[in-house]
Length: 201
Image (cartoon, rainbow, N blue to C red; front, side, top):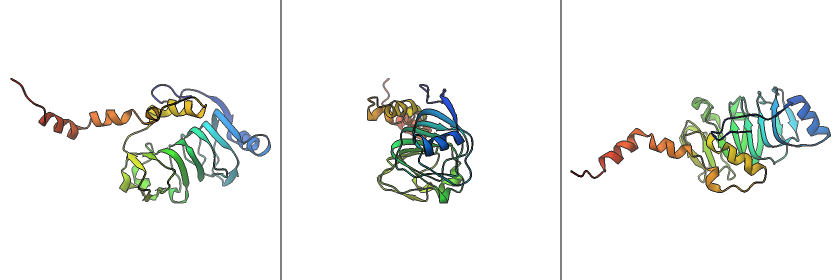
């Protein structure tokens, strides 16, 4: 579903209404699919996503089961509630952020406007890493054990997808490679390094 750069590539497409009906009547486990369409009215669902991308606005969805794995990508607007402690969750947008509850092992809010983060609560022991354009102080409440990174975690999308399929993935692969690039491109860090370099002549 995701290429080496972490960009969405392709997946089998299912309409949101079909997925919600299937979760109610047939199966609640969805894997390796793109779920298209909007769900803005409040609706409870047993849908359990693993390596699932939601391409539409799903701000009304309330995931009633604590489950899901791999990568869960809310490309447009994230849900009202989801708790998937073993997953990486990408959130492209927020609506009524103060009323939303999103919990995962890794949360990527990098595409969310920084001004909205003050309504976002990431106070949970399950949340290990948060990526965004803001810092820890940009968020409403934070857990002391959570690490905050001011980059995107896109480079790990493929690794998290593999993890969701049950493939062996090292912890190092699940940490964004972009962090190193961000440090290397930091002008202040570069200046400090330059000033502390020995000069031979």
